[in-house]
Image 1 (cartoon, rainbow, N blue to C red):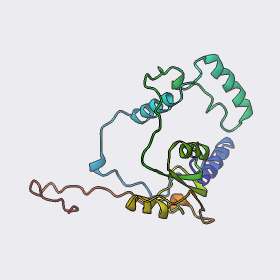
Image 2: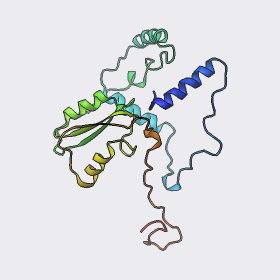
Image 3: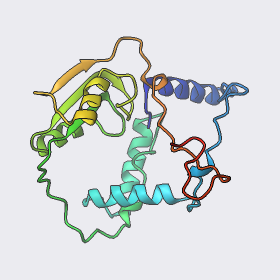
Image 4: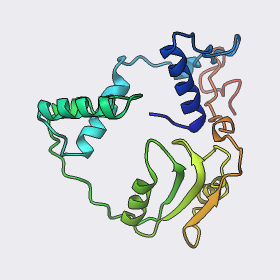
Length: 216
């Protein structure tokens, strides 16, 4: 699944090169390796921690996953013929086919505080139709739709929703009505993403209770 059109274009181009026996383009330019994770964020967790939490949410949210393996086999055969690029990637059997149905009932939305919902038009992870459903379910909420917006993240990406979101976060006020804005043509939201603030690491040499050298 693609997060943005630029990544999709590069990935498909590399797949075509691989199919033709050519070497794909280098993944990174020399010297552009990502910075190491600061020690303050280093945590020990099982390698499958992310996958396990993802499937725990997905399998519990939807309680009608098919459990017949033959159903998945038929879908896989059909999709391999129908989609030459992805084949049966999305129709193959998933952990939800064997996941025990959760005992907790679905949450009833009965919010008392209005929420601001930000949504890119082209979000491959949470599509626009899902955001519209959330907007209907949450009483008193407002939604900002970024036409032409790509990817899963909205706030801090440099889109036209940033101003409305900042006003909501700093003052708590919602716009009078839903808003629709458009990302300027040619703007790559992924390149404009703002860095998240990192907590200041403490100074090991400082006395107990003293602020760190980056703290105050």
